[in-house]
Image 1 (tube, rainbow, N blue to C red):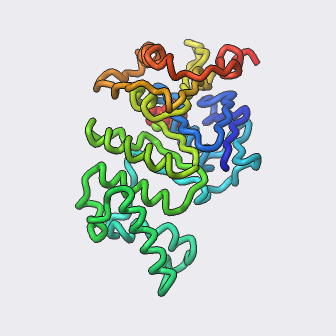
Image 2 (image 1 turned 30 degrees about the vertical axis):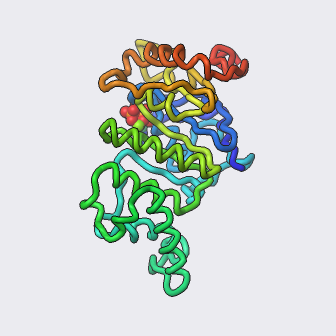
Image 3 (image 1 turned 180 degrees about the horizontal axis):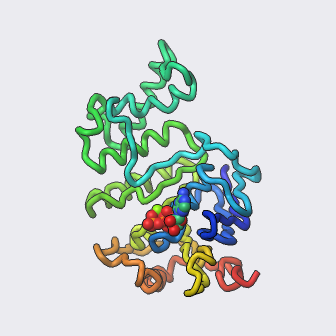
Length: 287
Ligand SMILES: Nc1ncnc2c1ncn2[C@@H]1O[C@H](COP(=O)(O)OP(=O)(O)OP(=O)(O)O)[C@@H](O)[C@H]1O
Ligand SMILES: [Mg+2]
């Protein structure tokens, strides 16, 4: 069981307000997708969830306990361009995290513990479709394969929460679709909640059980930095009722029309929307 509560969260960089009054409760096994225009603060929100940044206001709780102010392996992360270790094989890359956690000075386990870890790493590599590539180096892998390696690296730490920052942004459409099937499959078999950032609205509706739009609710043209982004849309989707939502076309996901595209998808997904009065952003904004 892992529940994430984001309470009155705000982040400033100097005079620049990036996030303000962000509130959301993500129940166990939620697949939350964060959408929003470029620069809205999506990565900042993920970095706050990871404790790579400290909030200016508010707090984040996991299972009712404020998160540790230092990054911990309980929150696994995959970035858009993941820095896998280029001089280590696929298998070593996956074994690295647990070895560093168990033996911080040598970064190496020996004997039975090493064999058990290698078995576990291979099981995960089989799940992400890389079992035939365990001896290769990252440069010998395609982009999609490197992302699958990054996912295996995150999962071997058995995180309570998996955080994904535009993990499939650089992939072509068909590789992306294969990754969608993989991540949905992993999510269904693991109980952890996923929080994923994307620009791709089709991807959001295909994968998410929850879609959070992060954007500025108010703007001051004279002082663009005065107001930060908050959650302007918060909807839940019932995965069992999802229609076949087509994957968004290239070029459709421009920030200027994001709200319009979002509304189209929302309309198309109307059969699988789950109504919750408390999710209405107008009510939250005035609260
Ligand atoms: N370390 C930092 N110092 C100062 N400003 C920062 C820092 N990190 C982010 N910002 C600012 O915060 C704002 C939000 O950045 P963030 O990276 O969270 O946006 P984003 O929504 O992830 O955008 P994109 O979709 O382009 O990745 C930007 O204006 C950025 O310049
Ligand atoms: Mg970002």
